[in-house]
Image: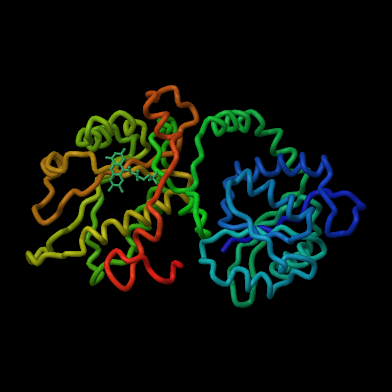
Amino acid sequence: MRLYFLRHGIAEDLASSDFARELTNRGRARLANAAKVIKQLGLRPSVIFTSPRLRSLQTAEIIAAELKIDLTVSEAVNFGFDLSDVKSLTRDMSYDDEVMFVGHNPDMSELVNKMTGSDVAMKKGGLARVDVYDREAARGELVWLIAPKVFDALRQQGAKTLRNDETASAALPDKPAVTHSPLHALIKRRWSPVAFDPMRPIEKSELFSILEAARWAASSYNLQPWRFIVAPRDNKQEFGKVFSVLKEGNQSWAKHAGVLMIAVSQTHRDTGEANSHAIHDLGLAIGQMVLQALHYDIYAHQMGGFYPEKARELYQIPANYEPKTAIAFGYRAGDLSHLSHAHRERDASGRQRIPLAEMVFNGAWAQRASFLD
Ligand SMILES: Cc1cc2nc3c(=O)[nH]c(=O)nc-3n(C[C@H](O)[C@H](O)[C@H](O)COP(=O)(O)O)c2cc1C
């Protein structure tokens, strides 16, 4: 688990109470810079816990807005934040989760020191990364500490790139799920875009993790009835081969994907016995893949619109396997000029779901579950 400790930014000296002390304009501006650098460095906390004191809350809000993630106000991160609070707040997190805490000194510096055996003093707006290797003992390694001045320098150095990114993201429609209950940030963020960036390949290591996520899905009798034909964009021949089995409507946008895949389900065991859960399990594996991909900002767009029999023929897929879907993976494009008007509209359009009451029953079929009331 990776923890980030961020001390709140520069705040006014006086207010009606310590609780109400706000960030100064300089404090805000520096944090806005820091937030952009944090984003560019690829930090992806799934949650930000902040102290409720206004200067901390405002700091967390600036970072959360830039990273487009939720924040949680927690009394535990207020004055007196200590190791037991870190343990209890991260109890349900998984080993590859990233969590950020925004709070006050001396707690922030003391926590980093206690966890890592270092002797650092965190400045206002400073950020430390601690990789936890012993959760029980709350011990970890201090991987880096970024002082506010270093954020300023990094921002200036990367200003050109950052400016380009800003232009790009300003053009990107953002459409997180509008939910009635809190959701994991990845589930909330996921959607199926058509605007992929043809210039940005998917790193091999990330592709491996995406496939590994499928590998570790649950399946009936652990039969793992999924297979994937995978074509990274830089392998022109293979990419062209998978591309050729897509229906024309999908080809029009999927040609920009970083990776194309055909997802195949093993509908019958080699003995001939049918596996009635094969399609269920393939879908589950793909669900894991899609979220793992999004962890790296790689979006997936699944397609039923392809020619399975053509895929069977091209790849000599045996009769007990069925090509079920094709999937396009890629980074989202900032420049939408290559897209048709209809595709641009599609990415900008809203998202809808049927209400829980229409899909969650008890008592009798189609009877809205009583606990929903
Ligand atoms: C099995 C499956 C097949 C799909 N087929 C296509 C397709 O052929 N073309 C397409 O543009 N989108 C396709 N989609 C994407 C859906 O239209 C999309 O997931 C749905 O509208 C919900 O939108 P969201 O993923 O953005 O939340 C498919 C999705 C799934 C899961």
